Image (cartoon, rainbow, N blue to C red):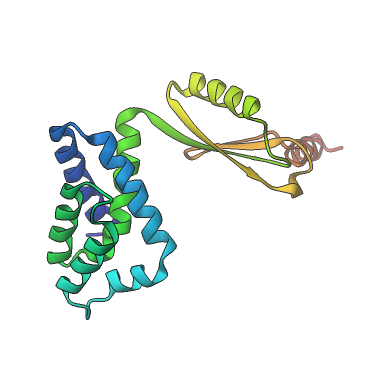
Length: 181
């Protein structure tokens, strides 16, 4: 079974537990925090994926890092994962939890890449337009790529809208080539 499938199953069980206890939003917030900490620390990633390090040592590290900062049921859940030899997928499980939470809540992540930073008003307008188009709540991030010259690229899931000058010039070039000009 792939890492993704295993992480997805653990994330789903944690979502079910959090839903039953009525604290799904709080657990999601904690899982985002945990994912950020694990992503930022290559040493922690190495410890969690190292099969030579004993499970009690891994549990102590996780408890010292997250004890009192995240919900106790998450720490208990991580203890189970570590005991089952799944500490190497804690990060993947946290990411998958957030993804599944967003899916349940109808939240879609989108990214707009522009030549210059967009204003808050432009970002809000874009969120509204995209949200109406796909009938979902949008979390939009803005990346800056000065090489675009002008326009923007919007990515929503596996779809991409290219409204850059370079993109329009490429379309024009393909059109002219197809017309035999």
